[in-house]
Image (cartoon, rainbow, N blue to C red; front, side, top):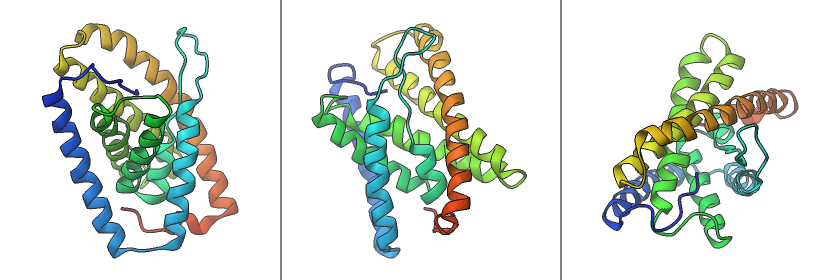
Length: 205
């Protein structure tokens, strides 16, 4: 999902940059009201983990390398604004490693940060009321689907490719990724609840 420079027209890229800046400003405001050393440490550690997770390509049955996101885990532990912040930090680091682009940074954050975080959080809140384990699984899967649909929309609006091509290529590809990551996120959260349950009680924003 790391869109490179040149795919999105500059006037559209600026809109995504503006959306990203607004989201990060809200996060900064919330952080100023809820300062916690433990949260700062977690954000730093999860940002590094996200850089690693999204940088490692794994062969898939579709013949296209896949990468995981880790943002759903951040959202479940810390909340959606934290997910957006971690996504921004990891994408910024990866920009210097040759992944993604500067003009498309806002668009990448909109899909891998904002859409993924909001989608995950909405379904986590809704479904976990009935069953927490199923809630984590569905939230992770739907967050990744939200991110995929957002990226498809961004690419279609940019005129770089057709909707039909994207639906038949990206959607099944990331659905496959979503199912695997959903199992992994559920297992990780279950382990955290047993080993470090206090992490699950942090304020989520």
